[in-house]
Image (cartoon, rainbow, N blue to C red; front, side, top):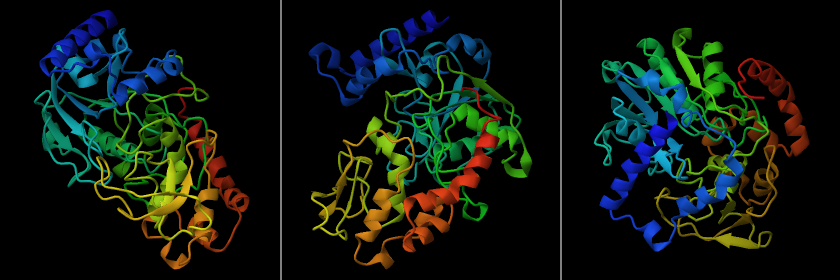
Length: 412
């Protein structure tokens, strides 16, 4: 079955590439995405994602009208090493895909963070695309009235404020309310080796944090969906009919290098590893690399002490960051590209930046509490509490969460 799928998808894209004038293979020049794919193949070669386990789900899709919840990360890797989009692959096999639902950043992954994604048509397939990051974050009953099955296939990065798990929540809710089964094609969590951070308090729930979990949850999308169902976090405690296509050869200790960047401002493995720690800067007057080629690998601000920091950069408008913080201004800070891989949240940079800011009253903004999930973290930093003291205050919440999490783990 998988050989038939791979052959069909390869031919499908060979024809498409020729018709679009794609000459990368003919000239020997690789795009940045292709270079990233080559880099990650050796790391990921043992792991088989849910999407690639076609023998486990292809028959289940036959004669059903299907809606895909996906983006640019929804891919199948062929025997040739190509990464073919799930939608394009299934269409080439005459699977009846009726429509697509797109999360933050859009179906092909080009919209800015926080930018409204509009309904429209996918230019490649002609399929109607319904936005889940605009006026409505949940599919309406009207948009689902002719659907027999929902498929969710989106690569997550394991941080509470990365909004794909919030989209998952609303998809599960719509699935339950409309009696439509949900099929999840599971993928690795690149930050799945650890669990850390303050647990979100219900009064600070928002789209960047919907559930009482820590900043880094250490779960795959499939595991997380089981927890949403099991803990009855959906509205009115409904539960959806859930089927998960599990991965092969994955466990939480394994590294995973993403072959396709999950959003415009997470371009590589380093940015994904640093993201849970540096995203706190989004709730301050410090830029976290948006508007540079080193997104979430550097931080800086015009308000930081230039005598203390040797590194500087100037954010500029660019794809994925049309209006970066401090655009056109010289920012002083740090370049973190050469630091060792993190296996816990780093608060040192945040606290240091606060201490090096002249006007501390303007350092935090109202978004910080939503990211932290608690007012306590800002208060602790402002009071001068040391990193270890702050982390000690998280301990009981993390113990409780890990006990709950253990009930829903698929992989060890």
